[in-house]
Length: 319
Image (cartoon, rainbow, N blue to C red; front, side, top):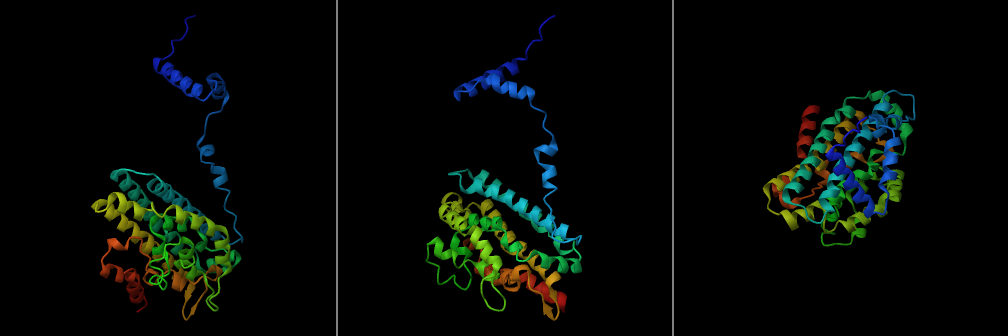
């Protein structure tokens, strides 16, 4: 019986593998034994599908709570996709303009999907069901998304995330720890009646403060804003994508949250407190926070009008 001739390409691959494993002091034949006996990979095992679909554990028997959980899990996966691109754009020492531009376009594409998907929250849940199950979630809140804060830290200098009321006072401050104490989102997690930190904020700070401060220090010279000025300043395509990122992250995305909060928590003449007691009326409107990642790319008039469009639309709808 004639022996089957081994394909030359396979032999070449085996030689390359042998060189690879020899360089690491490993025996290729042992690894081939493992390959021989290992099972074929399946789609459901590769993405851990059964585990993924088991991660929804509602706190009540109210059906629409599952929508609430699933949607927030989806948003966190999109944030992870965005951070994957941001990490490659910031922590890599030097990348060519086209690669940097590609990363920005991917980030903006993910943000587009997030913004367009928010109707799942705005229109996809029964209001009475939401108002019933939400009280079982205390003090948890979507405010506690650490990944979104990382997105902000990787996008811009820390001082651009300072509360608008403290920005002038701290404009020359470079100490990340001091700037951290005045970040804008902290004002959105204070008790409406007393002005004290909510338990929601205390939990969030206990889990993430150290990590956020370390990130701020590590990204002082390599966040997206710094990268632009050092390597790509004046590049029109990159400017366009940075402005899109600014608009999507700091106007369009929070406005989707505001629309949802207005729908579910605004019941004239009363306003229902958000989960965890967060001050959503002050925290969510972009026109109040005026968080702008790249102020140098916008005109004074554009920054003055930041987030005003939704205010006019909302006023018209209530007329």
